[in-house]
Image 1 (cartoon, rainbow, N blue to C red):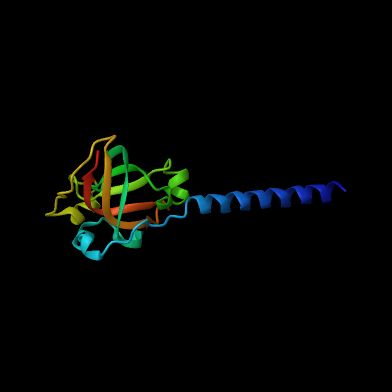
Image 2 (tube, rainbow, N blue to C red):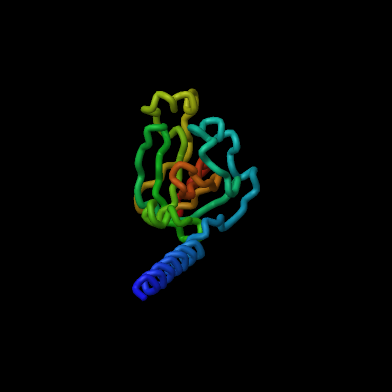
Length: 165
């Protein structure tokens, strides 16, 4: 009798876990809200992306509006921007859980890389993308990708940032 009760409890817990996962997947589908013509994004930027094979392209060119939460300089030369997007549908489950609910935005070659294996990607190139401040409302245009190392969605590389205020 106890074994039967334990089995039912395990099945109920498994069903609860699957249900919660499915609800979270529906809440955070990781879909681009707009598809822009490729001409709106600078495809040449891909030549300067450090290890581009880790990025799976979902949408070649899109734009996302939101508020800048933080800025940090990566060792690969990229400026990492945490964006609180107006439309949460651009987030996937990893953005929601491990990315604190933010969309990762990467301005490539914004500064000199400190990683020796990243210097080749930025050699002879410096980004001309407008850098926002924390708190700014912005529209970011770029490639919408999933970073296979982290599992979250990003705009990377970024072609343009417009300050909306």
